[in-house]
Length: 129
Image (cartoon, rainbow, N blue to C red; front, side, top):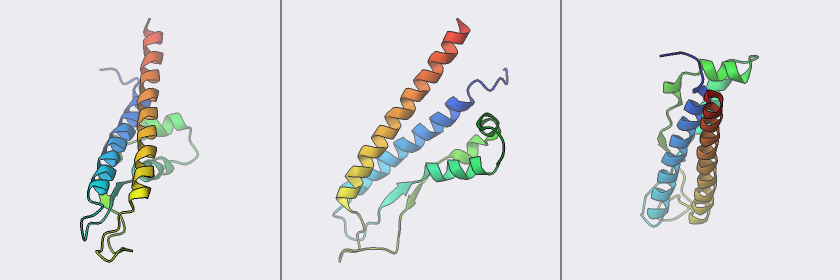
């Protein structure tokens, strides 16, 4: 297999799309448990992980940063957001209005990532022709 780096950006976009899908699942779960006593909202922070990984290599180009990324470090996971915080008497910390806004935001982000991946593949295809 050739190590051309042609798929480096696509790999990062794929990790982002997977994280967006996971975040949509977490937010949907929050909405479903909005009335469950004691439930604590869950979230996913891919952007923070990506920023941390890219920030480790300052003063080099984005291409070199992406090429040097360790893809296994970009696996996002669900975490409990503010486990000790609750503004309701039943100890639930889900705000349905905020969750619906976050859900709309993550769907736009996911669609943008998928569109970007499609465009990257189209660029590769045009070069191959």
